[in-house]
Amino acid sequence: MYPMLKPALRRAWRGRNTVQFGVTPAHAVSLGPMDIATGSFLELLDGTRGLPLLREEARALDLSDRHVDLLIGRLASAGLLDDPRAGGPEAESLRRRAEVMDRQRPDVASLSVVHHEPGSALRRMVARRAMRVQVRGAGRVGAAIAAVLSGSGVGQVEVLDGGRAEPWDVSPAGLPAASVGERRDTAARRLVRRSAAGPAPRSARSAEAEQAAACGQPGLSLIVVAPRDGLAVYAPAADTAAPWIASGTPHLYAGVIEATGVVGPLVLPGGTGCAGCLELRRADADPQWPRMLAQWRSGRRGAVAACDLGLATTVAGMAAAHALSFLDGELPASAGARWEAALPVLDWRSERVGPHADCSCGAAERTEGERAFDSGTAQDTMAG
Ligand SMILES: [Zn+2]
Image (cartoon, rainbow, N blue to C red; front, side, top):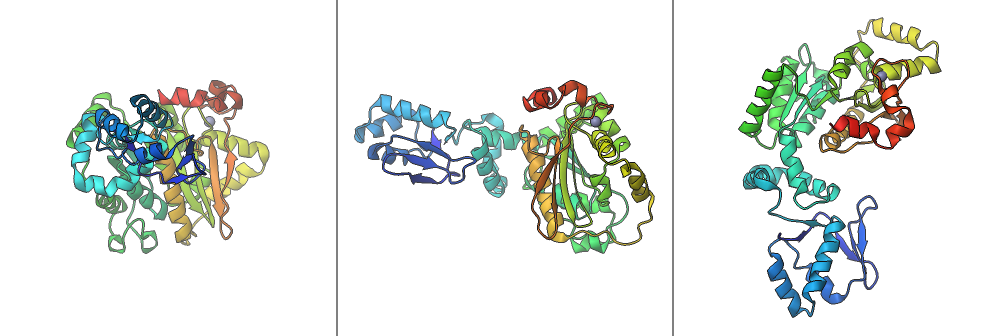
């Protein structure tokens, strides 16, 4: 091991004998008591020295071997240590691709803050490269989500949409002006390629393709539902989601309707509330909801839909972050909930989308109510 204090976390002395690693409450850790010599020793933890050399240099600071071992142990269990050589052979091969690594250095640093074990940041970045995500929709929101996922290292990002790109689909984070008139799916595919830090490793691509062909299954890690029509996110159709529920494919909704941005729910089929649950809950709360929904869905829409560029980009960024958190093995706050922000105040609010007992997705039975879901049953079930 070549211990390195995670460079992503800023260090500061908190008083005379405590060191705080990290600035924000979400990830900051304080360790003490720490004397001046130990503080100087921390400077040596830059990933260039193995333990024998560290012990030797510590002796020069009058620090015993035992002191060094205890300190390293405490730093490691606090999640503050990385190891620039850890992560296995795949991490090593990614490390050797200097241009790709340079592009993704901030993302890897961010992963190192969130994930504790040495080498886990790079391992997760490697794992992203083998993942396949489908983004349904190539408007202002969908195209930007696809671009961000691709740029964040997701190996395969497919975008589905019909028709040709219109001038109002263009966004600095998504389709460029040059794509107007081009098939939306073709333009989005090029955007995804251009956003990637480098080509996906050939082995990952072919293995995934072989697996998909052999099983006749899509092999998708996640579907992001980001249609150009925001109503299909605000009131998603249960029948559209039925095949994803049946195949157990996690899916995340994101979009803009009128002047409201929506992120979520992230649906873990059979574990958290789905589009059907959401529709049933709304009908329970408002008996007129189904009648209005039918009118909205069938109404003619000649006008270009309202979609604020800032809000669309925010929604796309937040949805991509939730998607990445899930792909990295976590359960983001959109699981079983939806987040909404409306112009002009833009305060994000969340609303729980709980399972509905009458929904055929089975989440209500599986979780036996919110207590079981909150205790992590859904995560355990869905992770496997
Ligand atoms: Zn349901």
